[in-house]
Amino acid sequence: MTAGATKTARLVAEAAAGAALEEVPRRVCAAVCEGLGMDGTTLSLLTDTPSRQLLAASNEAALLLEEIQFTVLEGPCISAAHSGEPVAVDDLRHELTPWPLFGATVRERLPQVESVYALPVFFGDYVLGSVDLLACRPHALTKEALEQTSQVADAVAAALLPTRQMLLTGAEAPAWEPEQVVRAHWFDTARAIGALVARRGLSPENALALMRAEAFRTGRSLADIATDILREPPPTS
Picture 1 (cartoon, rainbow, N blue to C red):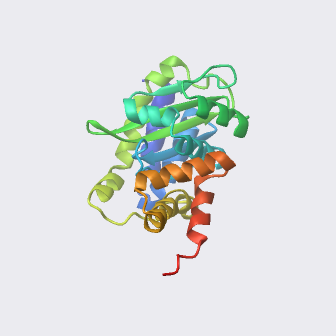
Picture 2 (cartoon, rainbow, N blue to C red; picture 1 turned 180 degrees about the horizontal axis):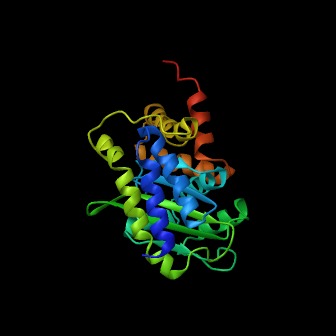
Picture 3 (cartoon, one colour; picture 1 turned 30 degrees about the horizontal axis):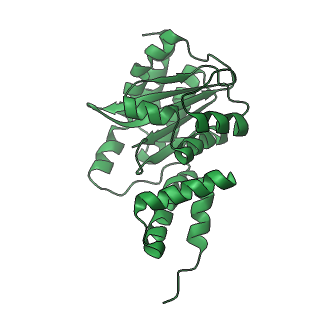
């Protein structure tokens, strides 16, 4: 393991040790940022499914990166969760990415971001989440460093083990920190999907597709679209 991966895995374990459950994702994101020298980190579960749950974003740039991928339904974190392999975009300014909508949108809305990495988080044999990393410089991780990030992802999985067990048993999720961010970018989106299903007779998949299309058309976030839907008065009978 490289020194950076060793340090980061240790920082993640220390960040989670003794922390309240609702604080763990935020503290893990901060530890990954510090250990790997990144400028932003996000952590999510069920990343490549309609049931995606954002657990934490270290800053506004990281949150916007996550929003873009969830809106256009493509990008490194979705690919990493689907394939089970780390994904690297070493030079976003000069590389063509395999995700045309993602690449164009990130260049427009996050011009300061020059490299992006995504790490799958395994629980046993299954990928149940991902860590997204962004940096304001190209080639922020060497090839060797990226190969060793599985050790970091393992440390993240260990830190999140109580979270995984809680979600699998159907227990109510804690108020992840920052609560207002996670609520806006997960809970309210799910409620808005339910509202469209009830009002328009859509399937949940089609309701989410409609929200994504509106977000992409207007350049607004899914959280904003969800807020508008939830503010609409229910139809009168």
